[in-house]
Amino acid sequence: MGVRRATEEDCKLVFDWANEPEVRNASFHTEKIEWLDHISWYLQKLKNPDSLILIFDVDGKPAGQIRFDKNSEENYFLISFLLDQKFRGKSLGRVLIEMGIAYLITQVQQAPFLCVGFVKKDNIASQRAFLKNEFLLVSESDVSLKFEKKVE
Image (cartoon, rainbow, N blue to C red; front, side, top):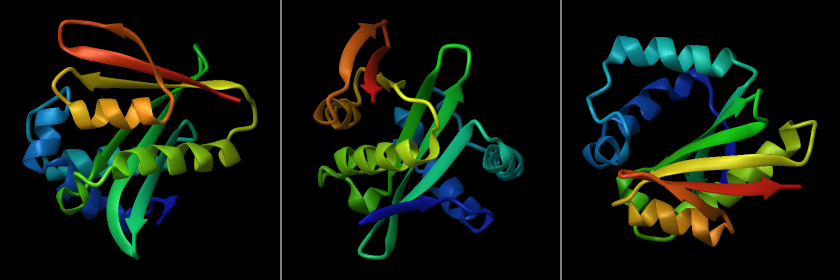
């Protein structure tokens, strides 16, 4: 298992994962993503120094992705992650977040920093993945939970 920085060649893979029905349902924006919109968004994210997309692999097969978007004003990284449907239900979300944060630490010059994740209330698997990585549940709304972890 490991993570690596995403490349332009991963654009279609990330697109297919993002449009998978369970992923769309777990997302805050549930509508289908259009291909041309995705290409533009994806290439912009790859070039943005405040965004990091990593591909997670299991036994040499792409199994998921994690993205960190830096909020410079408040000095935190917003986490978004997903697993390929073939790799769900195996507690790999915990591993993906753990490996992603370990990689992020090697890229960030200033510590400590905060990682933040928002999860829909009905997305129990993602909630568990954050809690198993020692994130704290800090607030909730009608639809979502907010998790935070200080990384030192």
